[in-house]
Length: 425
Image (cartoon, rainbow, N blue to C red):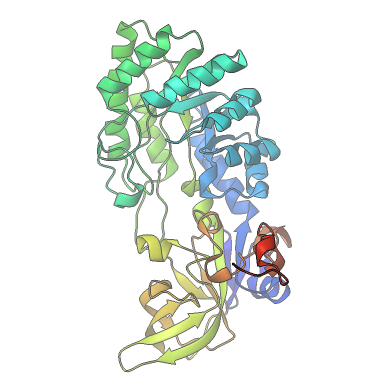
């Protein structure tokens, strides 16, 4: 459920007409709903209410400070994968003791930053990382809290680019190597074993892969127990899918019930890392039609948002519903490609899509763009990135300004040998 609804043929974000926001901030722009973000968090959190648990929002899904602050006020922790995400989470007010650090490529600098901050734990993904973390902790006179990410070799039945739980994926450790990592950590005075971590992929629309992975994790926990290794936290990751088109993911309550049933004989604190399921349908991308173009074989709507603004369709061939912001009466439906201004054939938001024949100047809403939208945007073709807007009831707030041309070149410098008076030898 989300709070983007039509009223008398006009799309509203909570209590504000979307076209009014577009008139004031220009296009394209990302638009988020406070009510939707808050509702999604509370529904997910309540579903696990019968278990000791901690929700650590997956910052990579949408890392805007306002979004992070909203979740912090709801009691959320954070799942981070970089020093930059750590900085964002702390700046937004998320307590360090609710932060877990995931990712395969943590640098010693990032490890030092996280140790100094006092995060809950590191989800370690290789023996090399574990040894480096030990050295960094020793240099700081600290003990690093760790969980080992195991790879359960479970098929998540999702897009191969966002599958993370198969042995051919780069994430986690196979069970035998993971055991070696735990035994190493058990003997190391600068490592403290707190938990176990498992994450099998993103945009999962079935419960069964989660259950299968959890059963393998449980069996491994019993194996660790026989080695005298006690597990306090079980981090099951995230990955629950949302509706983009015709998907039918399970509701959080059904997902939670299956997990709770599997954990009834295990005394652990459950950590979950929801991302897309919290923010995906809480955000939309608003774009303006520039031109209608027709060739002998294709019809195109050319809009002012491109693959640099929303990469998912070009990168994953992902489906996003697209609707006119003002419903078109008495217009024929046509089959079109909705394409952007980027100089790439792959620059599209939709292909062979049935839409009303909207006119240049009219607005389109690209739905379900709150996750992996702005965070994957770029300045390709030297295009300033769009602003992000947060609606709260009948008010809206610019939570990220549109980039300026000056901002595009702010970090660049022409060296002295290329100045006007110099001569190249």
